[in-house]
Length: 248
Image 1: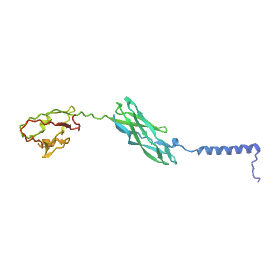
Image 2: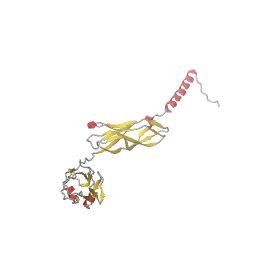
Image 3: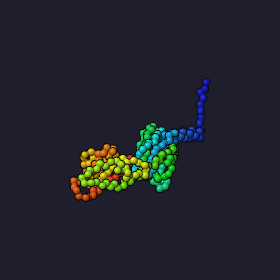
Image 4: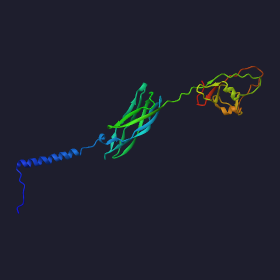
């Protein structure tokens, strides 16, 4: 039996080598280097929510993290970027991430940094963030800080006879105290020359807060000078309300 054979003329051999070269080109293209755009993504199906305070000046404060994944077997260094900003009503609020490195096939939680002031009136704004064309919803819950008005402390005038001490009871202060927010009197501050005042038998230092409970226990006493002469002793008293505000 005669063995079969293949005969090629010169043109056949040329085509054969061309095909080999093209296959090598295809193999080279399929093994191209992967980039961060190909590999580093936002973790899938994750949305984010955080809270901020309207009018608060944020200065590089991080409160929340976002999840980022590297789907490739090589590490990458990623430059920082702005995730979103808000200029509503004159706001200059910005959320951003800083430079970070991510290892091969790694998932990282990257901190988000806040800068500036949010002045908008939308108390639940939503933003769309993206990394390498992967998108997620980033929602904020904005709280409005409660503004507490200071209480009002009116003058208290007490007439005493010579050498007559006086217990300063709580009603003296309550009758000259008011608060537009409905807060109650929590403490009293006496400033100036406090040499004639004692609290539970001890001298009072000017500017010390005297708790309401101590006044209700009759511990605050004014000791009259040991003299028969007429004189006036004036000090300044301030009221501290239950929210911590002090009268002007």
